[in-house]
Image 1 (cartoon, protein in one colour):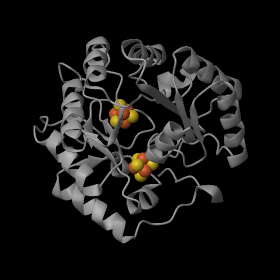
Image 2 (cartoon, protein in one colour):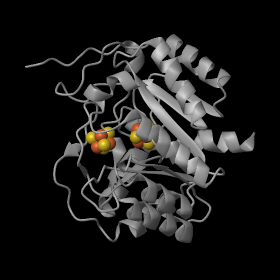
Image 3 (cartoon, helix red, strand yellow):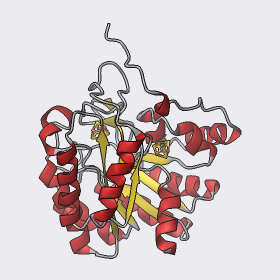
Image 4 (cartoon, helix red, strand yellow):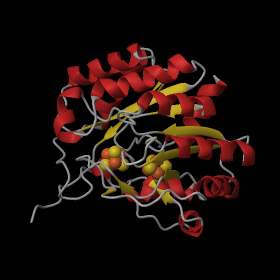
Length: 290
Ligand code: SF4
Ligand code: SF4
């Protein structure tokens, strides 16, 4: 049986036990909502849920893709829940969220790739909690990207996030269902439709990428007009997933962060435990205040 890899000290996180954690968990159960925090086995769940930050994962908990780094279940998804948009809005209201991050599994089985449900969720949030800023983290909508992006941008999220996940050389093994340049083009297209929407992307480090490849990804992102960048350490969710090739030190994350800022990103988060949605609300608020 393959063994779990030992993590360095800077990766260790506390077990989630707080009252806020329990309340967030119960609310998600009551509203029949999934979170990427749980499904992706995110190491920050204790900290985030204590502070009532959660990233809702719409369109079910079964994905039509099987990326080598991801803990989400793969298979034939269930029908889309028509009550989900209202439930997301209820969760945002009950948690008093200033900023909400919505993501989804990949739904290659749906004619619109799931874009319509993103639109309904954004509309339900605007109706019920108009003060909440909305960040969406979408799949690549393979083969349906133009229509999907147009519809979602028209609904007016504040931040449009789509992760490149890794350097192009590693796509065939790590993100086999996706194309690097298609993901870049998606983000470029968001900006073209509406330059007022902030675009955001992220990569995981520790999958065997070289330093210069990471710099190249940053340049590609800036050429596509991407505003915010997140970089975090890849962690192997189970022994069946892609192996960690190296644990990038906190100092190396700082160095990457400095380079990214010099390349002109408006906001950069780079640390071992950075995730796409980690501190997303605080960072967005800070950025708007400057
Ligand atoms: Fe996970 Fe997204 Fe890949 Fe699906 S498409 S397996 S949710 S990373
Ligand atoms: Fe959830 Fe994001 Fe926090 Fe992880 S970093 S627990 S996915 S909100």
